[in-house]
Length: 614
Image (tube, rainbow, N blue to C red; front, top):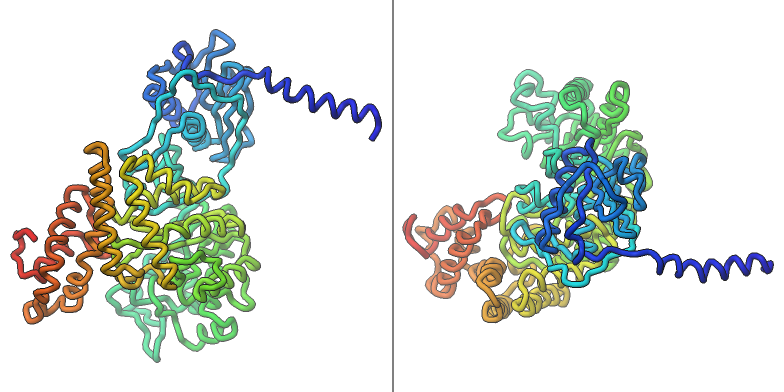
């Protein structure tokens, strides 16, 4: 190495740390005379971001900073969003080339800048700043952990930039779906429609669509040939297109009708960036000679479906080149076709409904997951725009313990490592208070935002902050449920009873003891209420025998009353279970059953009247 190069290298090594040492951070305990600067042309979301920053700082530092649009001094500002004043400051930068959620946080010499792309980057930047530098944690809808700043509390200097790897993130829990403000806090970009919260991503969930695009009650009587042929019969008159019917995908009139429906929807919703053209939720795909010939050649019913979707995509590309056509790769269409390739403007939403929820999707020891991984790889060769529909709850029994917390992190990392940009983590979206749903939502939302995080650390953090002194026995019970499932080799998908996930009498007994201990350790009524809510899953498991009996004999309970032994063993748990559900506003038993309907069925099983208590 030349002498001059060596001198310059040594100078850099010496001067770099010195320069950094000269840079000053910000002491949050001494910001009483600071302000929050918002540009006069700030968006609604940026205005809301400034208010959120002000309000959370007030709780943490006990100082309520003014929000201003003009600056009269060079320092002691927190700039929220881009603008002339921020750009001219010592922490200034531009955001003109930022993506819609890309953000940057600069802390330096008694100034802070938080800004990002529109519409959500600045708001997400504020929430990131609160988490990263103040230790704020958005745990549940009702519980935001805001630690006091303390004295002194120096943050920075820092220059942090982030662009979320997934552009579609949906932790599908009722706690998020029903609360747009909370959804924004956990950076779920698929729920808040209000531009105050940054609005939703332009990408929509790819979902079942044919039932709306070519309904049999409109076309079936006059044109039965538009609908699927099975065993020589056209299913043109059905109770539900969604669950009983599919269109004939080689009929040219069907292609015309569906295409016209798509174009009409795009005219009505010009901001759409994608639209579904996809199978209904059943296995009644057409077996007519024309459809069957394509499917036989391609080795999968996806052959005729993708050929049809490509036809719609070609027509849409003529007038809406920015719009993509999305279709589900689900159930009988999960396998990629042999020769048909998706058009460049076609998206594939790959669904993992057959997979085990106990093992990671890329676990080579699990046959069902190995098959999914193969289909995933095959599709990746054919399509550069794949979205994931992953399943994260027991849809048959929302309240039972479910041993799938450990797979959340590896599954999301698997999606990220394979270039996926859109992830729908379907769970108890139509419910509040599903089994440990608040913990699950916390883990999923944070991992979708940043897949580099640790699922175990997120779990430990939530338990420690939400249940405080009562956390250890709850943590022990979670470990027991998961250890037992792994040790017994369970490979169950997202529909099951307690036994399917290894929940037996010993697990129930351990759970009851764990939550009794947690109640004893709880240090406030607030924490006791949280422990109560979490304990619902064990009381639900404790009445499993009674529920299975009631389900088996649901049409003949008068002739098959609940056995005395089961009734005596479970009735007090049923009483406790439904009292807790009422107290904590838990509203669904399963995907298709409300708490009220389940309670009515069990009252009948116990021989009780409609208004009689358990």
